[in-house]
Length: 105
Image (cartoon, rainbow, N blue to C red; front, side, top):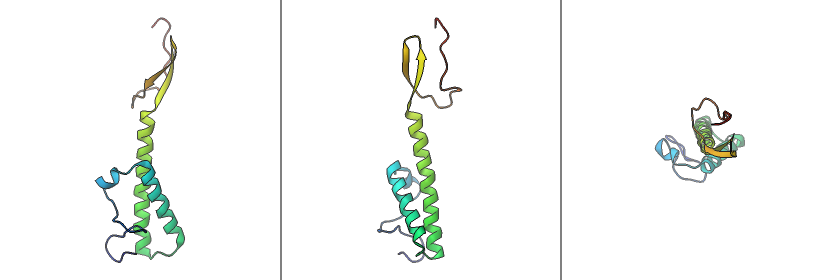
């Protein structure tokens, strides 16, 4: 366990912050979130350690949420058109994901 200053996650290694955290994949962030939960549930942390681990858990949960939003934006939306079902790229901010094609267009 680290003493004073920044806490190191169990298993060693420095706590990634800011730009370093943004480089984590969804799976890496989820693993770090799970580790934070396990450490908090252990009940063996001091108050300061628990707060540092909780803060990391919140950052990892938010990062996981952003990664899921990014994945959702990359999914293809299926639209039914004249030629049947067509795959079109998802357009963030579009008013409707499914817009029926008017006949003859």
